[in-house]
Amino acid sequence: MGFFDIKAICINCEKEVGLNRFTTAEGDLCSDCHKLCGYNMNTPINIKTMTDIQRDIAENDKEKKALSKFTPTKKIGKIIGLGNFIEFDEEKKQWLIPDGFLGGKKTPNIYNFDDILEYELLEDGDTVIKGGVGSAIAEGILFGGEHSVMGGITAGKKSKKSINSLKIKITVNDSRKPAEYINLIKYRIKIKSSIYIASYRLAQEVLSILGKIQKENDHKSLSEQ
Image (cartoon, rainbow, N blue to C red):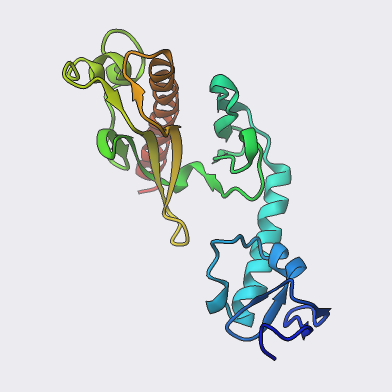
């Protein structure tokens, strides 16, 4: 059957479907099964095989169950009502980045603390601060005072009056999605603005927690050797 045939059979649930379907490498997939897989409009559905679909349905179901058990003990964000940027479950040693509207959670990836390999603060694509396995960000930079992230970075920006983006990149041990991003600023803004200053304070808070997690990971790694 071709895509423009009025009716087709879903290769997963074998139900008859109309034009509201998705064409995979091995046949048509109904919208319900497409949702069960956790796919979106950016998913390369045309290369998915039946084996991929069954695996993705099982993985998505597993992730939903994990999300229902995720209990955040710390949330960072809520700047001008935009929702949470990142959440931590310190009891289970897990974290996630909300992927829904205003900090809601649809199908976010849940990571363990020891999945973190590296993290960096990027301003207009340039690395401002970086930390990761086996390397430590100086506590003086992270934990306040005149040498904080905000004070230390802006000191060398006398000629720079605005930026276009500010984000935190977290590299993780996951081949499917090797990096997660926290977008703090996504549009041109003056560096003297209150939003810029507040965004850097949020960045400092996130980096401080990631630095503490990194120390725990390094200590755990040494104790296991």
